Image 1 (cartoon, helix red, strand yellow):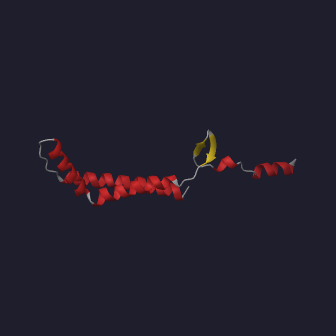
Image 2 (tube, rainbow, N blue to C red):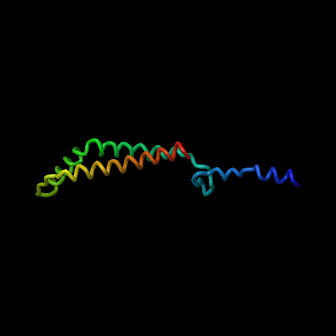
Image 3 (cartoon, rainbow, N blue to C red):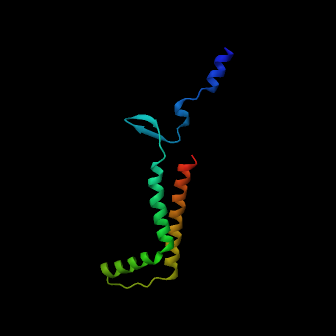
Length: 104
């Protein structure tokens, strides 16, 4: 009986190593984390774009206000800081997705 208990202790069920639950045809299968790359790359690119070049988004916002409305708008320094912070948040989310993929 002792050897049987040792075997049970060493046995790992295949579903014990599942990081995330994925279902294919209503059956639980181990997930491949490569889909996180499809989330990480856009978040990182958008975050870098917002944090490095916020002036492009401000120019687009000014153009859309002129095009759709008749008002003129002059942005302050806070708008640029807001876009940079927004970009950093996206960048951090993308790095977290990369970390989830590589360090599961």
